[in-house]
Image (tube, rainbow, N blue to C red; front, side, top):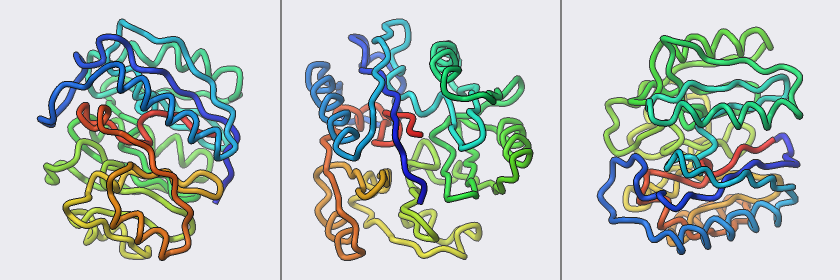
Length: 258
């Protein structure tokens, strides 16, 4: 499993609650979201990462979910073209920030749509989710860029899975051939060669977790999943995510890690 040294984050803006959401979990409390975001950054630092916090951007209510704007690999950064029209302006500042760290920067173009939350990296292989936010054209462009750098990829259509917005809402890579997966994705042919750690249906939100160096960040409040990871030898760090869950956000959404 590759080690990480840096993370890029952006705190939620004051109109965070005006962002896009498909769930009905209530309105996020801004002050609580700020506290949870700060705790998230502390968790990243405890894993050894240097955290770069970009300025709050009130123009884009969803801009705290920086993962959707880029996919970072050891060879290049790929700037996305978010599926939601209201989010496309977010990529400009992210590309500018990444220019100092990546010599190669590629982009997804019209008619492609691609959200970073639909990309699950598993070593040198990438799973690409086709979703309400990522279309076939975006997936094709992304796969072609990956192939230039000798990465492999395959597509998983998550549109029939109504409980998740993005592929990584229900799929995470822990290292090697081990994946965390929700029941609705567990029988996907693309995952047949992997060891799957299934998340119980009532804890499905916990499937979006992040392996960072020697630890796994998990959403707080899901004891069965935490116990399962512990039984598999993983040290976990629980982070409160209630206000971001209200806006379809998970742990991976809040940072770009490299």
